[in-house]
Amino acid sequence: MRRTLFNEDHEAFRKMIRGFVAAEVAPVFGSWEEAGHPPREFYNRLGELGILGIQVPEEYGGAGETSFKYQAVVAEECARAGVGFGGYVVHVNLVLPYLLKYATREQKERWLPPFAAGEMMTAIAMTEPGTGSDLAGMRTTARRDGDHYVLNGAKTFITGGVLADRVLVVARTSAAPAGDRRAGLSILAVDARSEGYAVGRKLEKIGLRSSDTAELSFTDVRVPAGDLLGEEGRGFEYLTHNLAEERLGIATTSYASAAAAVGFARAYVRDRTVFGKPVSSFQNTRFVLAECATEVEAARSLVDRAIEALDAGELTPADAAVAKLFCTEVQARVVDKCLQLHGGYGYILEYPIARLYADARVSRIYGGTSEVLKTIIAKDLQV
Image (cartoon, rainbow, N blue to C red; front, side):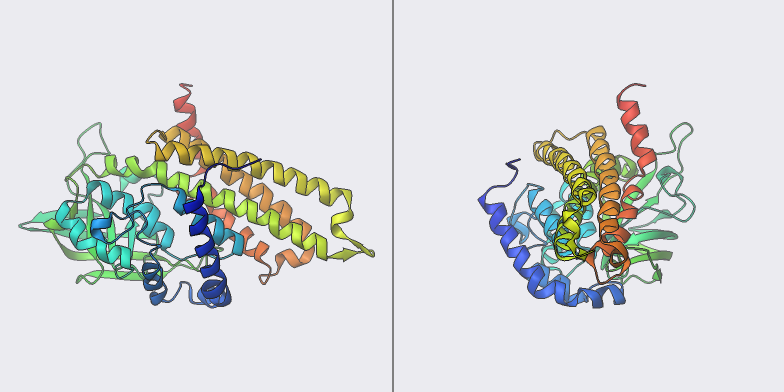
């Protein structure tokens, strides 16, 4: 079906991203996976090209675009080439919305220019050992001491945590009152150079191996009160505000991954011969690809509608939950079927389908597990 989501500006941006990926990312991506992250200068390069600052206001060195569509283009082009941009997604899709909505003008003047230039990479630290999706149960604390907060605690599964220069740390700044476990949380923008701030293990993952994921710890870290994001005690409210966009980002990446899997499988079965005939000539192959293409089309339609809703300020948490749940399940089914069409070669890492397969599994976990999303959707249905 004809797609109407993108205009000429988006397609020109796509052309630039596609050329950049082919020339500067794909040839060296294997070394990034071995290292566990891109080289630090890669983010400076993204800044030079204006990729990090697309949604940063012009007064702070960005392009001032407000649409999510540019981020969707990046997701599609990375999936198409079977590569990733490391901590880019967290930096742009997760952290930036918080800075744009809740940072003061003084904070934006300090943080957004280096953010757009790639000179200050960011991450967000919510999850703690033993808490998982239960954000209200976190134990990291930040005690006010004069014009500073004293931060103590630990975080885990922090994407971009190894190379991050500043991290949005969610901490408890006051005890939760009876009947409201969510109250008393705040967000501190912590400088990674602070004394007592430590990067622990770089976690070895099944997939997304070019994206660094780390454990962080804080021992009496003194954070200036001027680095509090928004108002004290409203952290949980802020977090839920951005969940819709975060989940749409995952849905978009999942759809793009499924579409790329179909492309890789289609090319493979045309070239591969069995019993003297192309694999594509067998009815089973054609039926499987037809099934996959149909699911991808449905996922694309849902993602496109959700992106339009986000840009219009109309994407609800339940809408985003529907998009993420559906697209991640489609991704799982389609990538698995496309790997099967590769036979034994689908299990070999030099084939991009193997990377897509390993990367896909976490989609149904992070950003809200499928089980959590079903709860949200059911609640919206009032059942």
